[in-house]
Image (cartoon, rainbow, N blue to C red; front, side, top):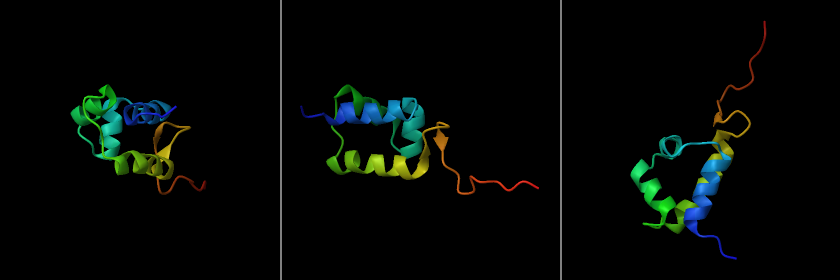
Length: 77
């Protein structure tokens, strides 16, 4: 079964625990564009579908449902 871009993007967003607004803000994609992609009204460029997971993996904290911070380990004391 071939997964469509709209399904892949929605799955990524939901797995990250983001609303459409949060997802669009995180990636700098207009909300309306994301809505059109997820509804299948427009198709995103293939390179975008391939690059989204890389940014999520590198910059999104799935456990805490927020962007990773550069200084995530704090020293006590």
